[in-house]
Length: 246
Image 1 (spheres, rainbow, N blue to C red):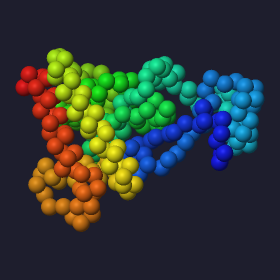
Image 2 (cartoon, one colour):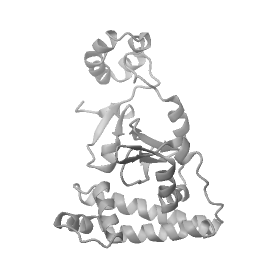
Image 3 (tube, rainbow, N blue to C red):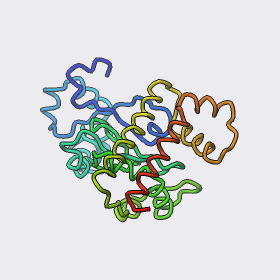
Image 4 (tube, one colour):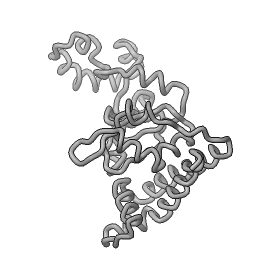
């Protein structure tokens, strides 16, 4: 749909795991949730026609009676997620299966793929604790494995995780560092379209291990300012350790 125009309310940005860890694909999705068939045709005729020609024929062949009746809607409406994100401007996400456990903020305008684990927490204090070595090691122990790759299981990795009883001062410090961490990664990726989180964190691990970088890794190091990234993570870890009384 080239000329979006007034259709912007139901054409939304979409992210899956590869968009987060690898290159951003700039994919958008039609989300007609909340509209019945006549409303959709009346208010968004261009989108209606797009779905009518491309989606309805396939849906009418489906054995699922609901999909046949509500052919213009997603298979799963995810009412729980919609309710959770109602009234907030952003949420924390992580890719379910990934080598380096990374958490970041996404705007609520973004539709997440089912392979993203999402938490309706807008306070960067929680982003900071989840991004700390305390939680990433916890997640490795409490989660599962898909081949060689760790899997984040929300029931065991998040729901049972003991957040620290941090003071207001400690929360403020963690919050500030988490905001700076999130902003740093996004800023560098906006400046360099080929820069990925996977490559940045692979280089970060080599810096921690004091291993030599390849020519490609040196480029990632310069584009991502990975030494700055490492410093932010180290300071964040120290702040979270202090909040636990360590």
